[in-house]
Amino acid sequence: MSSAYSTHRLETSERTRPTSFYLPMPALDSEPLSLSMDIESVLAAKDSEQPNVAKRASNVLRLAEETGKLQEELRAMNERVERAERRRLDLLAKAERKLHQ
Image (cartoon, rainbow, N blue to C red):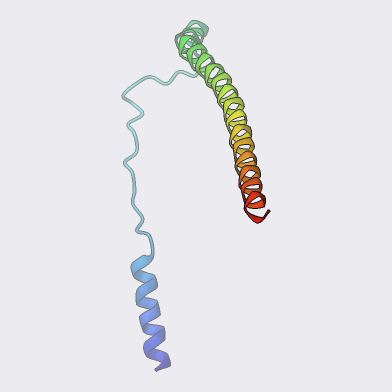
């Protein structure tokens, strides 16, 4: 019984073991390697991303303001509901007292 269990366990672990694979190495002779970068290309990349970043920041600020307004509205609604519930309970209590008089 024990050996069958250990054999099954070994087979299971072999099946779940990740298979290894090899990626082909890139051909290094296809392009000349250069470690120097043109500063203009770096700045151009940053400049091209700038409008997107500014737009995202603007959207985040707008959504934060909208969230704040919605939270204030929700608080006000909750207060109105609680006031209405208290008033309803008061009216029920008054009606009940009137019946018992």
